[in-house]
Image (cartoon, rainbow, N blue to C red; front, side, top):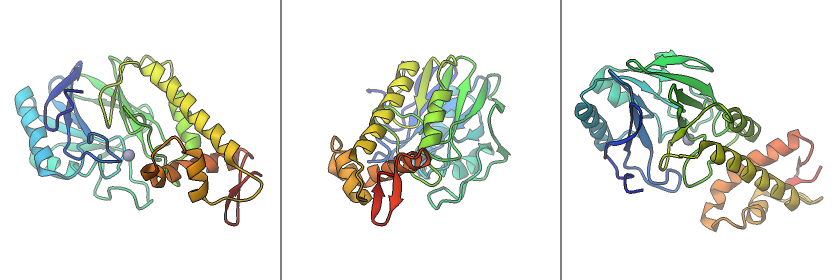
Length: 277
Ligand SMILES: [Zn+2]
């Protein structure tokens, strides 16, 4: 973890470097990771929040690496990942590639891709390439990016040191499970997450995350009764292993589990909350 120092340029793999932004917090862990990727030029993956110091750190990183920043790519448009694009584009003339913005009131509305990316689209990053993989779940417009060497930029699909929040309606637990399975057995050798250090055991992390989510979902079913319970009550039972100050955030993922369970006929929404069907 020694390398998780804000502003420090850290090599993480072939043609790949990390610069941590200065926005640590409950939702961001040590802060947002911005990555620089490319051989002859640099693509910035997730420029992070709007922050002058972080912008200067990214520009300094490019000078240190002696390559121009020509592209900005984002994994999704939450406000800790994409707003830094505007100032970075103004400083470098880079073009923006990535998803469109879902209309759920939780997004960075300033994001505007010059080229929209979707499943299987490849992006040339100065002689090396990335392939976009649609991974909805955390949010509906989430993309991961896979290099030819098996390095996966995971954004908030998988982060190190914590589970991610699934906030409906754009976030979907059904989609999240499917997007985790989608990444299994496709030659990923290293994951570069949006928050935390690199993940060096990708397949283990994928199967553990799937198991963890399934266990949580089983617990949701166990806690449901014939009488409807409000989310605020259910969350204390389902997340009794999680500190109380995180229960507000956990309610978002809990509602995502319940929506999935309702679609599968295992839960029902009733007056006053959620119950067994
Ligand atoms: Zn996010």
